[in-house]
Image (cartoon, rainbow, N blue to C red; front, side, top):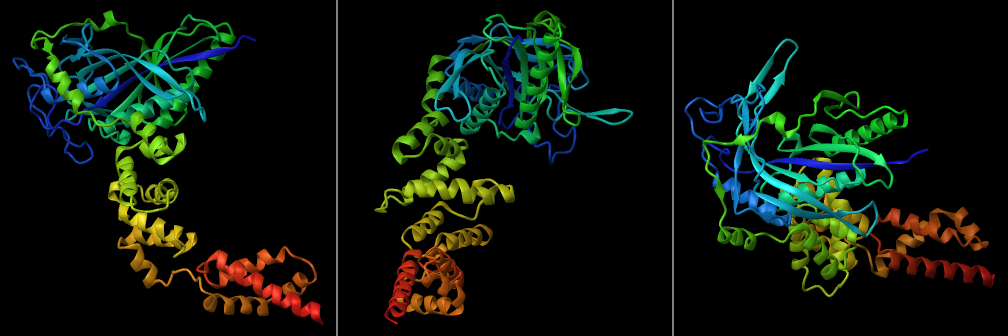
Length: 494
């Protein structure tokens, strides 16, 4: 049986975090709260006789992304009219870039395969600016349109067909989202539609260099939808080819309810859009000095930060990837490590990483909030981890303290004191509890003295339970061993 492999290219549309729209002065508003059609004007609704003006801030944001993606910046780029009519595009065309885009020939590296240490370089074909469309709201017998989004600056990032699996497509989209958030040009909030994916999918016989007939899956607004839609389309096309049927090039949508792709229209080619230079906008000239200023102001990017965390803090590739995926998390972790710089415990950066990526992340996910909204400051987390590491409180008590910090804030020291969570270490405190546990369990003690040595661990568990986890395990073990030895000697002497 012929084996097939997928070939995937992604087009990513990212709304830019400017205060005003791409070609007019209308404010960019949050669609969650703004009244429909409350931020529109003659320009963004395409009234006759109006003239667009290029948003300089949007160009600067686009330059940030293009440089971070290792692209070549065009000294001169041109806006064009992309002609097609939908109700959400009142002009009858979209102002975009085609023949001469802002940037070309870039790349980004992603993880090659799940668990693999190797990376894969994905080529970026082009990065260009355009304007977003309005939003259609469909009802049973009619549709409504909200033009608040019409004209919002939109950045389109087009990859080459270098992605060869669903996993790679997901990793690529995650890497781009992380990059956009690091650059502070896009919030990455997929639920609000500010970041959308379109996947070009084809399959070919494994080992072939020739591309198959592709379909384009439009407007995917979650990583889950992206993964499932691409996987479905790969399976569908593979089944067609194995049955001797052709794949028809067209545009499809993803039906989330039925978990299938559905045809929308035949696939347009460039000539179908009747591109022509935008007559109301001059060519965009980007001076080299401007590019240099933007490049110099770029922050440390995710890949570089991930590599540095591995080198400086001894983190694994996985841990470093988790902690650098979002810039606020990376900043939080680094602030925590810096506040622990005077500690003599060289493993503290690793311990902080573990507490952050497991326990604190779990609380953040449950509450559905970001790390910069948390009551747990980086300094408080360090003090808490240090208290566990130096034996002042047990790991179980540490988790309790973290939960209280998360809900109420405050300091870990005061929570430990108020709730009596300090670990018992001295003999005077632990030995009476050991003696009581042995006295309360005569049957198990008799079995131990008769040779069932494994019961020692059971006794230790009972001691930890009796102290509500506050006994230092090493100290409790020492006192238990001493008590059992005394009893064993007494029994032997009889």
